[in-house]
Every structure is written in C-alpha cells, then in structure tokens.
Image (tube, rainbow, N blue to C red; front, side, top):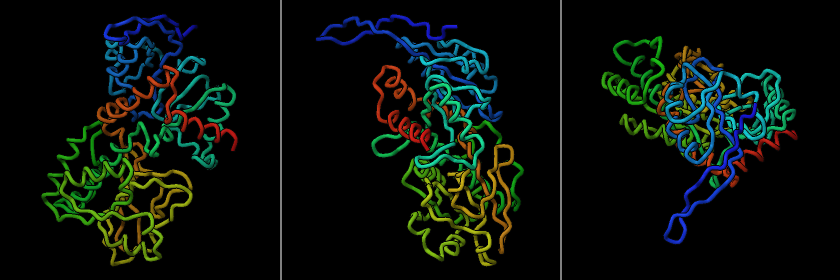
Length: 384
C-alpha cells in the first residue's frame, strides 16, 4: 500500500506586492499512532493543528483510539484519514509517526521517522536496566529508522521544545496540596483517590483552594525552579498563595541535607537529574522530630539516576500515592510519571501548539536545531 500519496499542491506566497503561485512536492505524511497505556488519553497533535498541516498539503493519518481525548470524528471533520490500530508499523521512509510514549515492542523494525518519549537512553548511556532499551534500538537499526526522543528536542538554551513539563509541574504540585489538605484537614486521612481522571487543572485547583481553607498552611521545599517543570510548580504555588523555599542542587551536597529537608512539610521535586545528581532523603535519616509528610516527585526518574532514596516504585493514576515508613511519621509519596495524562485536554493542546511549528520545519526539509539535537543523541545511543 502506498501511504505517501504524493501530490503537487499549490502554496500561496508573497511576491513584491502581489500574490504569486508556487509549486512544491509533498513527500511525507504524518501518522498519529494509538497508545499502549490504557490510561493514556493525550494526543501529540490536536485536530485543529492537524488541519494546519493538511492546509499545507500534507496528509495526516490518525489511528483509531476510543479513549483519546479527541474523537475519531473530530479528526475526520478536520480532514484526517482514520486508520486501524497499529497500522503505523507498515509505514516506510516517507512517514513521520507521532506518539506520546514508547509503543509496544513486537520485535518488528522501525521504518521512517518517529517522535515519542522513550526513556530508554540518555545523552551518555543506554538504560541497560530496562529490558526494552536494546530491543527498541535494535528495531531502529534493523529498519533504518530515526528516533527523535521528545526528551531531547531542545533549543539553543537547552529548553525542551515541545514539552509536557509545565503541565506536569502544575499537576504534581496541586496534587501535593490536595493531599496535604486531606491529611491535615478535618478528615485527617489520605483519600483513596486524589482526583477523577480525566479532569482539568481548574477543577484540581478549586479542590486545593477549598481544602487549604480548612487546615494550616504547609512549609514547602521546591527543588528545581529553573526548568519548565519548576515554572509550572511555582505558578500553582502562587495561585494557591503558598510560600515555598527554593533549594539548589548545590544545597543537596550538604551532609546534613536530610535533616534540612525533614524540616519541611512538603517536598516538590522538579529537578532535571543525571549521573552527577547527589542522592538524598534516605528513610533511615528521617527521625522522630521530622515534619515531612509528603514528597511529590514530579521528575520521576525510573533508572539508577533517581536521587530520592526513600522513593520506591512509581505510583500511578489508579494508585496515585503510597506510604513509606521512616524512623518518624510515615511519608506519603506521589510519583506518577505520566502526570499530564490526568489533564489530557490541556496537556494535548499545549503540547500540540509547540509541536506543530516544529513539524513544519521537519516536513518542509528545513530541519531546525531541536531535530538536530534529538537526532544526535539518538545516533550516539546507537554506538554505545
């Protein structure tokens, strides 16, 4: 089957005070694949932004996904071609396949260009502790495809473009505030659920505002304020009127850092970490005088770089919190590595609005710096 369906469309361009017509070949199609995670409702491209690509002459194929926040019919109304699940595997070199997270690895090769968060390699190493890492890279080697990990689509300042980071910072912080209001408010007990997914940020903020009115204000340590995740966290803290102390990476090198952190009610971690990030907050070092009740680990490192020693496994949308025993009071941990999936509509709209201009550059053959940066990290991973 020929999925490219090459066409020779017209583009209107400005020319010395008059509109002129210019012809150019369209060689690539966009394929939005379905997601594996049953709780994943986000989309990397909204129907409205898909129509912008279609207006430029590109075809946009969208796999059917009943749980996606945008329906198949919405994409159809905007000119997209609806496809069965997993038909992205049949694509070839002229296709850019968009996803949110790692697809199911069946051993089949990856052809063409793929954009998704993999979390299978860093700038310096393959995450061999993950059984999927080599399997994914071998698939790209066999098919000759290219992976642009969304994690490494970065601009000249090193900022991720696009990113879910700001939304993640907002959601992870407001959930910590809601949990605090539950354990310190009239109920004095952690809720079975902090939210009903999918939801919207305004709904979460409303619940936090209401709950905080019935309890004392927490002391908060915020780790990592410079990145987009930290920006999102600060926005929510300001919205809720909560004071916080910003702690630097350098401060984590203090031998007494666990005692310092134990003096706060809530720790919100937004740090970008790597192999050089110091480890901290061991459960054994949290004594009977500790104030610490909640750790919201928004960074959610799942490999050996996880810096928060008391944090065990990740939590999830279905089970968003768990309790860690210490030498003092137990600490509640929020460690959901797909926080933006809780607010799928806002997350998808924000991500797609950043992704679409990047797609124009990739599809038009003028590969910009974010694509170059991500490709360099991928090619390096193939040689490690």
